[in-house]
Image 1 (cartoon, rainbow, N blue to C red):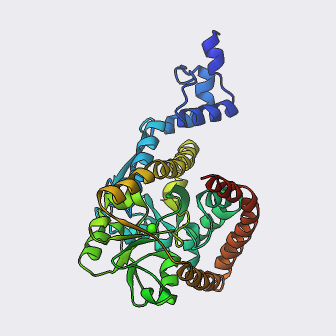
Image 2: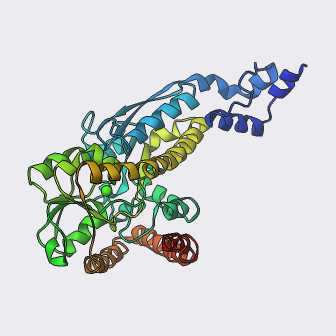
Amino acid sequence: MNTQQRQCQLTRWQRGVRVLSLALGLLLGLSACAPTEESAAANTAGAADTKVYEWKMITTWPKNLPGLGAAPERLAERLRIMSNGRLDIKVYGAGELVGALEVFDAVSQGTAQMGHGAAYYWRGKNPAAAMFATVPFGMNAQEMNGWLRYGGGLALWRELYGKFNLVPFAAGNSGVQMAGWFNKEINSIEDLQGLKMRIPGIGGEVLSRAGGVPVVLPGGEIFTALQTGVIDATEWVGPYNDLAFSLHTAAKYYYYPGWHEPGPTLEAFVNKDAWEALPRDLQAMIEVATQAINEDMLSEFTARNNAALDTLINEHGVQLRRLPDDVIAALRASSEEVVAEIAEVDPLAKRVYDSYMAYLEDVRRYHSISEQAYMNLRESAD
Ligand code: CA
């Protein structure tokens, strides 16, 4: 037996590592091994491993939109490479196979095997779903990732989506968003009265309690609605994605901070039957690739938002404004009311609420002396 053959007689554990190594694209030199009789026999599942899974991924985003729309494209591309073509996923933009807000049902029913969106679009299924996207005045991106991965959040998310025959994954985060685009200045809570604003999720309900009129529109319909006066204001994401939609040509005032979306998690979800039909290694690749995309999106927004904001202000004359403190205070009061009502929906919604709020309380305490203390210290140096 030569050295290469010895190296190729992988134990079960080593084969698992090899799969993950391939999945991560790390070239450890193992992929060149020719199987020995023993290793081929031990890997009888190998025959089935050549099967190609041709999947469709439908999304709530316009095809090829930078940022949000890039995530499903990159996810499919990475999975294709990692699986050596065995997981071949074609990505469809909103409206190509089904409408943007029909993605959840379509994947649940098996029209497509996979979807990419944001959990707050599915509040109608269960109001607690929105908590897996974002909660006004709640967790930021770093904290959401902590809760989902190590605070029990993901297990609850899987339990809730499992009722709809879906398996969810965190697959993107924009970081703190902007409060949005307005055609008039917001100087007091009275300026929100009757304001028709595109704002989904719990934030929309909060705006409603504060006297506004929330409208839910998918991204691809926002610009026209704002330009034609169907809505008076809109939130979307932040400078990088808002510039791509040319929202600055339809409204002049750009407000911060994004009280309603302090670090929304974007999601990928897989039809449960399709998930269970996958071999374990392809399942592991989806776990790893969604985690990578989750990080990739936050990194891209972090890197590109500043330049986009400069362009909006300096080249397009956008007026940057901070929401007044009394408006923020009113929104916060409404928000506490709306979020507390989620716990009353059903026992699972209560468990989601309790888990989120307990984690938020814990992480706030520590972040007040770590992340937040450091940010304050850094700002005070200017
Ligand atoms: Ca948004």
